[in-house]
Length: 463
Image 1 (tube, rainbow, N blue to C red):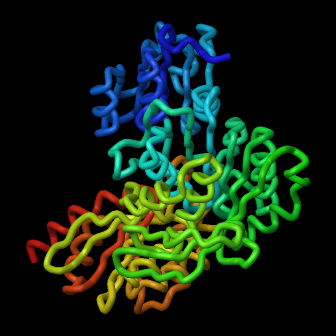
Image 2 (image 1 turned 90 degrees about the horizontal axis):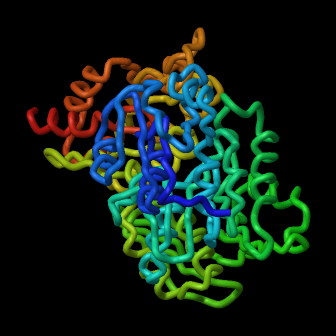
């Protein structure tokens, strides 16, 4: 049963986060009264205030007064005063995924999952469907450059969501359609090994509604392993659609060409040539993300030509190979990549983008647990850059772990290719001095390393 949104007051604890703010935007668009708090003020909070959302800087028990239900971010500890006040007052508490699941009720929903590529694939599918005139609702973990927002209440009956597996909560969505881009070990703070990840994705697939569909990458080792272990999907009324370069893929890519500012591939659907899929962004991995979006759009009944035209219009999501600017013929790019596989794909793209110039990476590892688990893999992926400046680990919600610093990665890289420098101001100065015309500097990580882009451009400009 759908909630009576115009007569509901939702309060968010941690409203400034990308996922939480998106849900808040949709709720107020449905007529609900929305309030929320966050530790620090931000441009995100300013944008929410402009929509009529009541925001508080700092957490206080008084903030929850009058709320019908409370929505918490997974980063909020049990000791939070607003959580304690809500429990004391008998105010229902929802996890972020539960709240999003409520919003999806009654829609033909598509949940985009996978270790990598979720944000870009969700954004691509959204933009493509918009170009088809379907005006989907959407909730994405980053701002889509085409629309300038991370969430929207659409007029159509389709709802596209990014399904984050990091805490296992995406099994709450029960979508009509699911997409799995790839499966690898990550979030080692929550999952002991790859079998735990596999089990979670299997549970996600089993939540897809009968009569719905699963789009999956037939080239990915983890996805193939999952599909081999799943019960017969057809018997559950779920249509399996595969995509990739493999000969047996339902949507097959070939004649792939990746250039500095675009990427193109021929697309075949079950043996029938659909035409060329051209993107206005570069990266081989992005062609695969687009193939997932195209497969899903076709299953939703959209026109192939309109979908291809919409994908060609896609200009990217924030912090996904986002060009921050150029100074003295040096280009600065920012990317959210924080797993070795993501960094490999991003640096390979940067190499094509740079042409004859050098690729200079500035990497800020995200979480001590991930740094410890993947230090060797990080070293190998970062070695694809001509030189890497390593910042210290961004802890997120983790406490320091003895012996775990960025030096673990630096020690596994050729000494001439890495500079371990924990100081951000020093890195800005060093990179500006090191860079030459034609170089590409890329800031990498899920922490606050993205704040360096403008500072680097200014420093280079002032050389």
